[in-house]
Length: 222
Image (cartoon, rainbow, N blue to C red; front, side):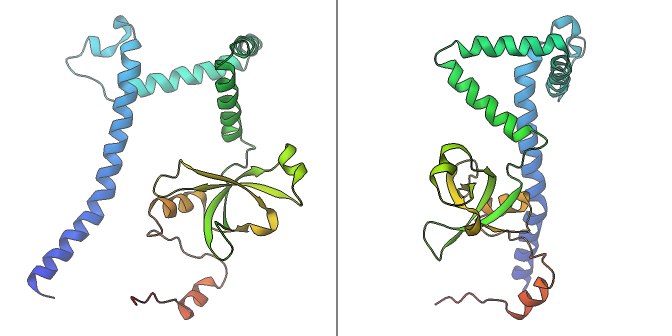
């Protein structure tokens, strides 16, 4: 390698080392700063440590928010808390527009946060948008209700994310026999989607590493 080629290699190596760390710290700081900006002004001045200190405390709003949500969760576990939750639900259901938003958000959060939930627990390959072309998807549950009744066989709810923004995508109702379950984790699947296939998790199936080495495909430029 020439001197300039070596410098270029060192430069890109430095980017590979510092970019993930720097971007992670920057995004974390943005989240903490946003939560602090929303929560800290709500703390009474007499209980706010920043009132008596000449500097701000990063993360104070995050700590207060976590403690507040934990206390609310503990209170709702009691008899009075459950009664208040039911009363608030009844009030929300009487509001024409708000009730639809509240009901949808509550159902989604209960499904995702429930300990028994199987949403986004498996990564699958499905042929989409046509036969012979495969795309990565996530099982969000087993199809039920009218959709399952009018379809033939056992059907799964599969969310197909878009690249590089996995929060948007398509909902497909895929027959169980047409969904190829992968061994990669959901985190690995999301990384693959966000990177556009640049980050590819290894094949952990027994004997797959040996076959992959023997049958490694080559991508031709022509």
